Amino acid sequence: MKLFHPLESAFKKRLVIASVAARALILTQVKGVENSWVGAGKRERSEYNQSIDRENRSA
Image (cartoon, rainbow, N blue to C red):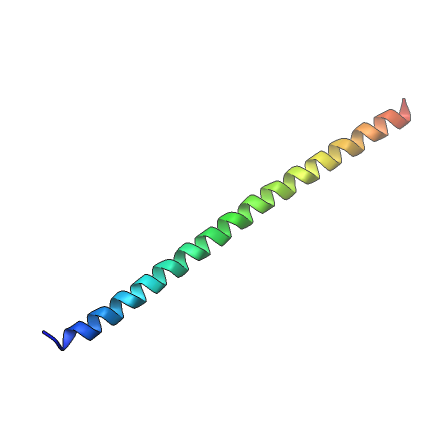
């Protein structure tokens, strides 16, 4: 059974590394989605402010 122990521990290390990498990838993608929503909100506010400015100038 001692023959399989190094293989088992190497497999566990790779599994841990893979799971950490997967979590990091998921978190970066979630952050990207959040940032795109923030960007969309800023664009909407900017468009709204521009429309208010146009209305004020025409009034």
